[in-house]
Length: 229
Image (cartoon, rainbow, N blue to C red; front, side, top):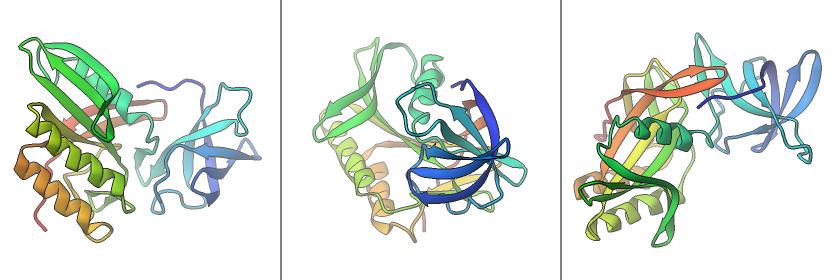
């Protein structure tokens, strides 16, 4: 997924989860944060960030924060871009072969899943996508805050299986330089327990890292998912 009108800034502070104050060309700008997670280990005062200039004239904020420099690594924090990145990747035939249909935002039960796929052989699948930005020592964890919505998605992916569909949960690790993905047991133990049950039921649990540029994000290599505590 490619961004346009990208510029660099310095993060100053985050008054609430929706906005950040960023210094751009010597001016302090109020910017939209496209990630409602905590991101405390990323959004640190003085950190280099990358922003996309907003096109909508009626918006209150003129920029979106899309990426953060963490050491030598660049981390994309745009939670809205991962679905499109996965769709682009799937259309290349990397994971699902012989696709005949791929749609976004399809409802099943009480959930609206990110992607729905049909194959030429008649099989069908629901796919849910989760962006991951929390990293420590090469290990990434999800979630960075409790997510009852995430538990509901896992439960209903299991229900998809019972109705004859295939089911996938894809963790998109929005950076490079990691070697393992695991549930964040300390932050939300119930999510980890539900994730284990979903895998045992037959839900495909996958994780992929990404090639990140200030103006681009592309899925790259599979990362092992470790569910044992």
